[in-house]
Image (cartoon, rainbow, N blue to C red; front, side, top):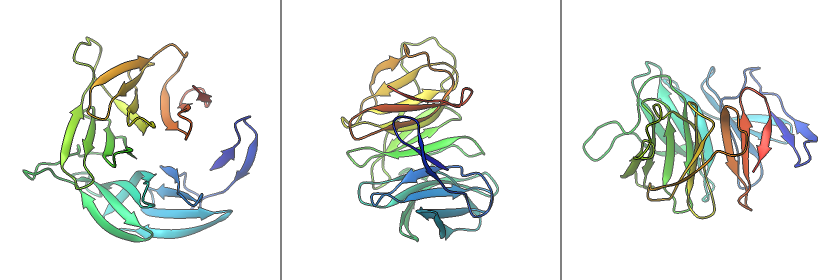
Length: 228
C-alpha cells in the first residue's frame, strides 16, 4: 500500500503481513490505515510501518471497508459458502452489529462472490455498491432500507454494474459503472442528478472525495489516479 502526495510523489509504503494484496483500504479519523485481507479473512490496522490484526471472523470473508464519522469501521463481508452478505460495524476490534436483511427478512445484498463496496453518507446512511445484480443499496444506520438505485429511469444503456462508491459534502452518492466511462451522481434520496463523462476516464475502479470535494478516480487499465 503506497501513500502519495498530490504531486504524485511517493511518501511511504507498507507491506501486508501475510504478503497477500489488500482487498479494501481506508483511512481512520486518527490517520491510521485499515485494510482487509480476503485470503486470511483478517481486518488489519497499519500505523506507520507496523501492521496489527484488528479482527478475524472465521466463516466470513472481509472485502471493502470504510471509516465512519464516529470512528467505527464498516466492512462488507461474504460467507464462506457465498450464500450470505452483510455489512458489519466494528469499534476497534469489536463487532457492534451487522446489517443483512430488510424488515421482511429478505437479503438486502446479493449473494455470491461479486464486487461490493461500502461508504457512509453525511446523513449517516450506509451506502453499498452491489455489482451484481447491479444496484446502489442505501440503508439507515439502523439497517432499515431507504432505497435502491439501479440506474437512471430514462436510460436505454446496458445493465448497471457499479464497481465503487463514495459520497461528497452535499450527501450526493457517486459510483462508477464497469460497463461505460461514466460516473453516476445521485442525491441522498436516490434521485439521479447527472453523469461525469467528459474527463476521458477509462475503466474507473476506485473513487474517493476529499474534504474539499475534489474527486479522485483510480483507473484499472491505466494504473492512473486522476483528480477531478
